[in-house]
Length: 413
Image 1 (cartoon, rainbow, N blue to C red):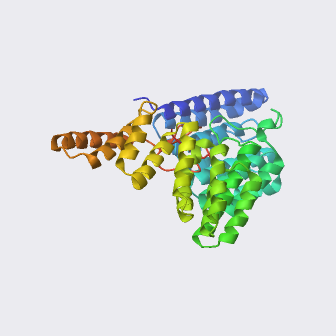
Image 2: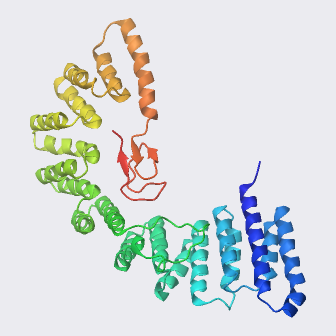
Image 3: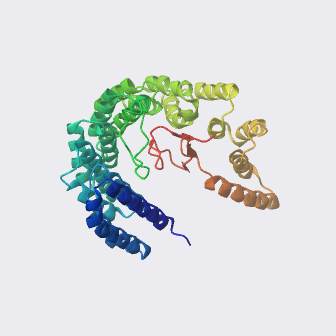
């Protein structure tokens, strides 16, 4: 099988050879005559090591083949980034450390190499080393400051240091939207060095709201409800339409003994982003029961279902009817909406209710087998999916585990 990584390395090696020829053509003829043989020898030795799958020796030869300067540093940056993307982080670190030790780099190139080395450390899980390099870049300013702050946010997210993540996110907001920069303003990146997608201001504000919500959840675990409300106020200042903030504030108000306030907050979610309303239903149920208003709760659910047929809402209402009015009421509701929602989940729930009231032995066996099969299908189906990258799963992740974006994972209909 073709090793595409090796092929890419060979392409890089050929590019190095071409650059050698171009670089030497700029020298005087006498210098070319004296030095070309040594340079060509180092280049071909490196190429030979690559062909023999000896990349460490190849690196040595390429690094010693010719002087690193403004004309050649980009080749080594590409080579190091390629190693990192192939998972050979140790080799990437070695290339970039060697570059950083060279005294003849201009400040811009030094910052570019420093950023590449920080990303090597980040890929290797050496977060403290990456953090130190990135903080230096931020302090220096310059064109790589935005990229450095964004990588720092990545580190703080992994460390769950939400306070520092908020500080870094606010710095990004002050710098401005990177998507609005002109071609001349954007820092130079090579094709093999792709950081996280740049966020615009709205996405940064969304992330900041989620950082505050993470602090809210920690405060709730500690039982510090007043501190939780302060963090929620900050979250809503960043993103007034944050569904997660509304859910958490509803929980806080309920825990503080304010079910009426919780109901008002949770009902807003249906208008903020209807797809998340199913996440509020269990807590709404608790609030109405705490107020002894089960009939009002059922009437509200029915009115919502009349306005828009929603699978999660339908199944939740069916369960409520089954608890309060029995199996027959739940079955009637399912049968009324089954033509509109002919999904395995709805059919599976109907079979559960049927089996609870079925007495005929053969019918019971048949229904049991059918119910087991449909239950298996339902259990294998994902409940949530990321609208950005398509990641799916059974748990609601406020930050997508795949594309690392906040607020893109939503319940499936």
